[in-house]
Image (cartoon, rainbow, N blue to C red; front, side, top):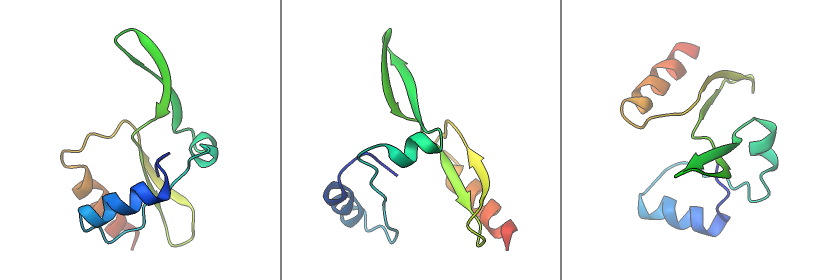
Length: 87
């Protein structure tokens, strides 16, 4: 989920040939509700931004696992393993 506009997300998905739907949350409604809209800091200045997080949702629609402050390296494999474990 991103605060980017749907058109920008569609262009990104096309460029990288992604087979998933990227969600837009321009108003930050969903990101605030799940606690991903957080205060950040860079070079001593505070600002609001999206916490890089992954939410694994089970077939029942409930959040099965959450990863906060995600680092790209090996993350996809970890999420895939957790998804497979859900069945």
